[in-house]
Length: 88
Figure 1 (cartoon, one colour):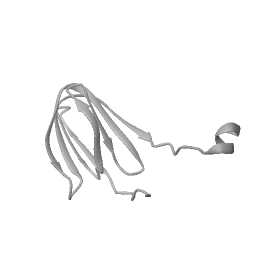
Figure 2 (cartoon, rainbow, N blue to C red):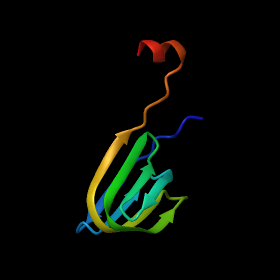
Figure 3 (cartoon, rainbow, N blue to C red):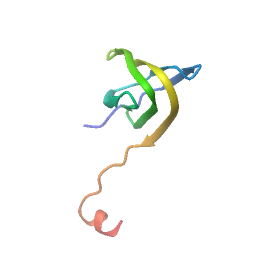
């Protein structure tokens, strides 16, 4: 099943609050990181004392509080099959 591309909007307020729209799923979290699926990739938030304050699955919005040290975007890689994997 192919994932739908969503519009994402990221707001960071004074390095202690993040509001992100366009979230498909929470992949993992603890007090030092939160990793989120945004359809065509992932967003990883690193920090200290991070907490998920709210998550709207219908609207795809998440609010995270705590000290934010970094926000990283990664592109999700598709698995290569057979010959392409050997030659790639």
